[in-house]
Image 1 (tube, helix red, strand yellow):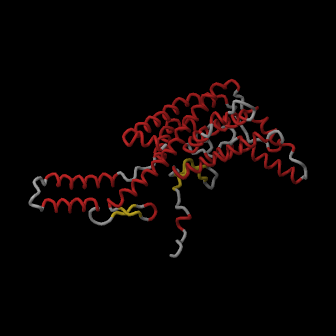
Image 2 (cartoon, rainbow, N blue to C red; image 1 turned 135 degrees about the horizontal axis):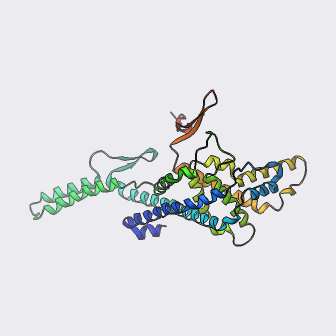
Length: 357
């Protein structure tokens, strides 16, 4: 990544970033009719998985609910599209790390000449008066021009003015911003066009458990199917799709405001919860957990996928926090009030008393 930054330079790198962001927008547009096709193939009602049936009962229930056998080619195209989006976002995260290191190195080199001092909380403080580089060249110019043997003082005045221009230029471009945060904001704007189709508000104002066809439900079905296929033998879908599928799917889910729904109703998450219940009950009965035998590879793949999803969601919360919390308030009569916004409150950690104060 360092080589790419050095090879392209500050002039060509923005063109590459713009091309990748345009590809994200185009890919989201191309996914829209495919997602609609998978939504139409979903059953009218999908309930919670029955825990009393154990892992075997949960997997049987999922196969009965997700009848996507006629949509195999469509599923592959959707997974590939989500993977491409995730690959670009992951690449942007690596580029963001490199650019931050380059900015830090440049700051260390330029700050003594610009009179900049690092402050607390990442702030940059400027020394009073003119910067050292401007003072140096101004005093040098004054000393040279005052010499009667100086035949061409205009060039030295030009040099002094160039120092002032360089001072303003470098100070204005010290903080280039976050490429990853810009990419996430761009992706969010691209998703706004399809928000009504991929994240329809529930009719009652409460979380829709059974009839929802939002994007998180589609991704949940795709995820558990490719996880199951990945442990059945080559070709390994996890190796083909990699971590990019989680980056793409979780980012879309998060930006659509569906993270909580996904974590509550995802099929693989429910299977893991059923496994914990089943193992606990067998342990209390002093019996071996032979009921989950044969499912170990799939359960391990689900756990790995959940850890990766949690990592992506944590990154998104840190780098792209949602400004408003959209919720549903309930009157005393029981009538829901839709789309009530609550401003995010200040973090408790920021209000704690500081050490030594």
